[in-house]
Length: 132
Image 1 (cartoon, rainbow, N blue to C red):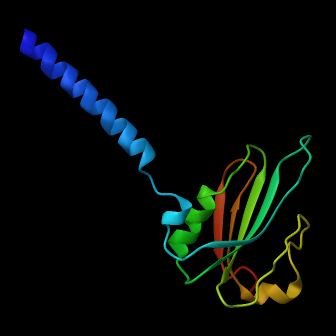
Image 2: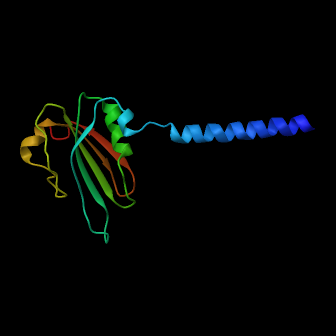
Image 3: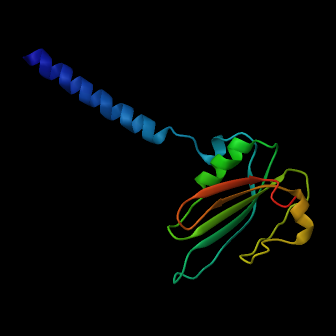
């Protein structure tokens, strides 16, 4: 009976340790391949409506899955909208973005390789070469 309690305690402690290890050892933005670098960011400052976020990001290669994961890591607010525009490192890219329908100057559209969007209902989309 005493050994059953000891084994039960060891199993419970092991489970708790495993749970904490899994919780804190997950991937983060800096663990992704591609050398992601945030070039520009804007967020509306009002708190009366949906929170809108727009990012322009550069990366070293067309790593589609890594881009989608990067977008998933970006903050999102329920009923808000988050957009991430991806550009290749070394190519022209915007240094400022806006919340308008045209988030950056027309000249940069041909260099945008992908866009990630998480909508108001938390549905995400990922489009390769969105302006072609």
